[in-house]
Amino acid sequence: MSHNTVAENQRRHRLDDDEQRWLFGYGSLIYLVDFPYLESRPASIRGWSRRFWQGSHDHRGTELNPGRVVTLIEDPDAVCGGLAYLIEAPVFRQLDEREKNGYLRVATEMTFADGSQANGLTYIATPANEAYLGAASESDIARHICGAAGPSGPNDEYLLQLAEALRRLGQHDRHVFNIESHILKIKRQ
Figure 1 (spheres, rainbow, N blue to C red):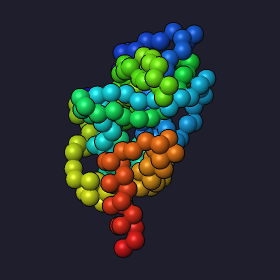
Figure 2 (tube, rainbow, N blue to C red; figure 1 turned 180 degrees about the vertical axis):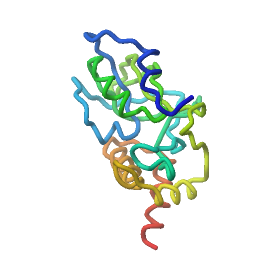
Figure 3 (cartoon, rainbow, N blue to C red; figure 1 turned 135 degrees about the horizontal axis):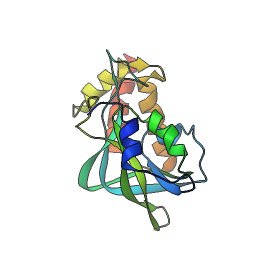
Figure 4 (cartoon, rainbow, N blue to C red; figure 1 turned 60 degrees about the horizontal axis):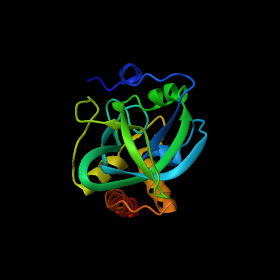
């Protein structure tokens, strides 16, 4: 599958312009909210773990030197925390452009902080897309991140902003925080 997924997303999830849907954000959608929304609430999804396994050729890296950004991988016992946004359907066209580098919209059930639940959509980059980088040690991921930058800025800025946003939400993500620790050591050298 090509890493430009705009057309595929619009084909997979046709939405009427007057529809409202929940969107679950677990990466830059937590701290870089450049889209209109009607409501935002802390939320989590079960069965998924956040991992820095997706390449970024268009935001935090380049075609020749892609950065690493998060995606979700199936993990039956995991709970991934983030933010849910209630948005109007036309906003997905803007988000499809933003998340075009290998991410597909998928349906998910999310649980809000008060225990209530709702169905919504999230973006996931699977191993089937050309930009997928896959697993690596957290120290290797940190070195990779420290060496990449793209039109949206340095790749380490993405990781550091995500870690800080997760702390503000009271979310603990061992993978993100371990990579952050490695990056901070690299930056001190």
